Length: 120
Length: 111
Image (tube, rainbow over all chains, first blue to last red; front, side, top):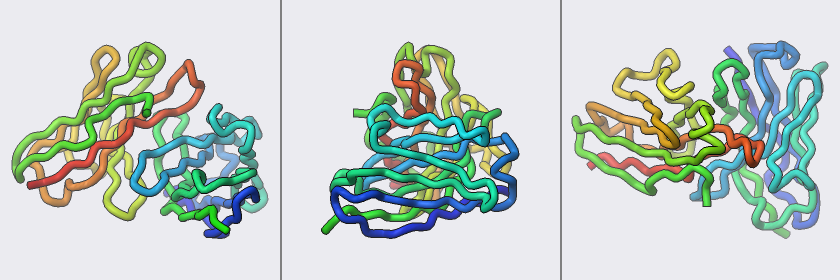
């Protein structure tokens, strides 16, 4: 079955760029079965969709983050990535990558999540 | 302030039945978009419990069930067990915001 694993720095300085990668196994990222997604969760708070990318390269971003977000895909490595610019303390959260199933409109499966702290 | 509104907490004794509500609007649940439910155990990633309003993925016990009516949806858990203590989130799509949205989450305590 599909499995996802996030990787990237756990600490980012304010005003700098947060960069994370999600490695997909168990399916080709080009299969067309999923929208490859990023979701975040600040400590003790709820879930927020950041955006997703389809195998064609088309993207959809949360309007509240759109000016700072870029999601890209590397089919040769079966990975997709997140970049969030000009981070502040408010961007400190656990970041999850997840597969948005196109047929069922649900996020399944999820990666285990990675904590990113924005601090100097 | 979440687009989908859930009660912050619910509780029940072992063996009892509890329900968790998820209230949306005409741009999400009321527009016909499907509702999903996720269970998040402490320190872990959310896990899909219900998709397309009422469907359980394989491996999810039939103690969990979902329903939808109008601009709201509900998750019911029967035969409550200690292992059900977790946070539960509803999720749908909002056409006004053009983004997938989650409820604020409900913490279930098994007394």
